[in-house]
Length: 89
Image 1: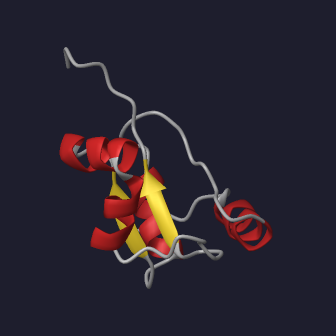
Image 2: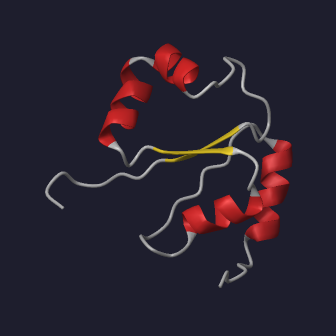
Image 3: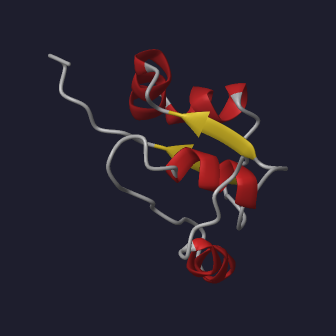
């Protein structure tokens, strides 16, 4: 069951006004679930996978080709879930 969040309208509004929207927060609070619910027809890529994160950082051109991302992103064309975690977790 999906739990609607008060911030949904703010996310949608920001998504129409900018090319990227950064959503941060504690683990397991519904960030990814909310984005997937609000934008079901868009590419969802998580950089929690160390291989994807390294590729995006070290070879953004190849990363773009693999995920069929145009070099000049349009609004809502891609949502990235970037999580910073310490290596000792």
